[in-house]
Structures are given as structure tokens and as C-alpha cells.
Image: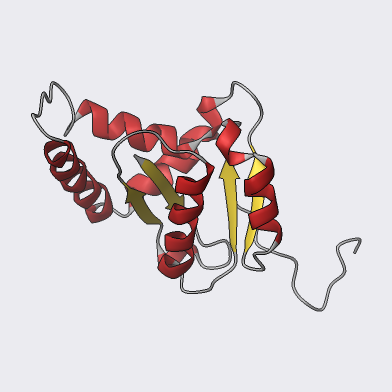
Length: 152
């Protein structure tokens, strides 16, 4: 399962956006590029800064080459061994403590259904995704106004 939490830097009232992708097996670079293609559609061409951990598929040569061709996407890397800085880890924790707790499904579809219920629960509370970010201690800084240089 791959997940993303989106926070709008200049308009927090737009709310956080949550998306996830589920597939059998593990994710490799090609699988993650497919997910990112869906993220591009999900965010309808808006510029995205993606904060990723150090998973090798996130930083492979093929991934870096693909990202270099994307004008809508910027990657930032979390420090090594710092899951406490990743708001998506808190998303997974919330799902595991509620919808996925003690789930012993016979099929991947059982996990997908339970996860979708959790996603709906989290989306129904607009403060919850923001609490995941707040818990990390990270903040979102809006870009500099176009009429100011960064050194002003």
C-alpha cells in the first residue's frame, strides 16, 4: 500500500488531501512511478512537493531520471531513520489501530475494504490529517510572494 497526505501551503482552509494506492506484492521504482502518475492526475496539475523517506525505490537512478522530467514535482528527502517526521506513518498507525486491528482477511480485497473505510473515517474529520502533520513538528511554509526575492 502506498499513501500520500497533501497539504496546501498557501491555503490551509482547502483541507488536507489523502490518497492511497494498493497492489499485490511490493512496490519497486516502476510501480511507484505508476502511483506518481496517478498523483499527478489527483492533484490536477498543481505543483507538488513530495517528502519521501529513504526507501531505495524512492531514490533509484530511474526514479531520479523520471522526476527530472516532471515540471510539477519536487522531491525532498526525510532524514534517515526518522519515521517520526513522516505524517504518513501516523496515517498508517491510525489505520492499524482501528480498521486493520486484528484483521485476518482471506483476500487482499478484505484489506482494501477495511483500508477504504479508514480513509473515509480520516477524511470525515478534516482536523485529523492536519494533526498527523502537527505531531511530526514539521510546518508548511508558503512560497515567497512573487514580488519579493528570497534574500529580502
